[in-house]
Length: 219
Image (cartoon, rainbow, N blue to C red; front, side):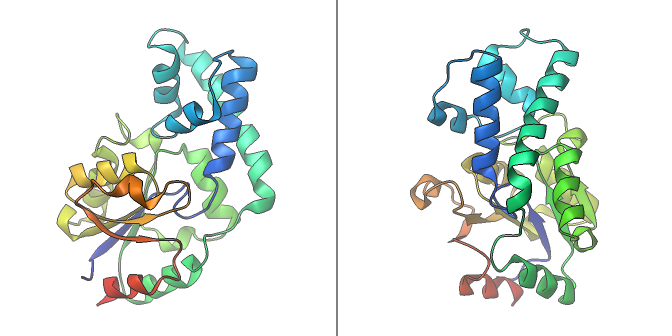
């Protein structure tokens, strides 16, 4: 069951921060933009690029490019300020990354996050050296559940999609991996196991990286 390359989503997969993203968006959408969304409604939009989220909520022509960038900046500032004191890798991930590096497994990040948030994690936690490829929201035309993020990561890793194992926390991300032709390990940081039952590419569901199931992927 070993994989030749690992591709990691970031938020909710490497760090357990999705609640902070939901909270920041909830504040911006309701307090500043008067969207009138419930917590669960905001949570349902937690995938893809920031601009894609705004289009889903308000329609295509509600905001100019400059307004979208400003809203995104405000949201990310709220998120980083709130989450910074809690910034740490999910349990078991430091050792897992070291083991993969020692085994010579190329690793990439394939995330819908903007570079600002990716840098926030990689540089503050000093883990950039593990990843030879980083694909952010700025590197793709359409984000997850479109497969472009993961296909782009595989291309830059010089790997075949079937040889890549994706680590994800969200159904839309698992769908993106499925459409890219990749198996997926699911982290249940924000979603329940039952939400992934219809995805045939799920190779395992774990709470964190201490799960013994992950040993199979080094064989």
